[in-house]
Length: 103
Image (cartoon, helix red, strand yellow):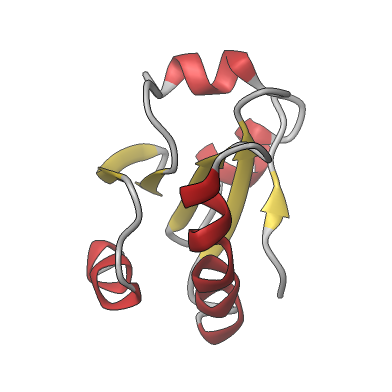
């Protein structure tokens, strides 16, 4: 399953009410580090399909969601389980560190 694009319209349904852990990638098209991280996020989405929901939030299009999560630098990764933030990191991370965030 590919990454799911999150907007304020589907945020509650796809993230807060998810029965699986959710990895959210806050990004922007102009952000070089975000583009570097994107293929890693796609790999995780494929490898963890069925176990983890992988979502992307474009901070330029969804400023309200970025504000809720206090996003001040991107890329920012947030893990949500049972509607609560359980882990977060800012900047490019190696795949193994991102996977460790999901545990």
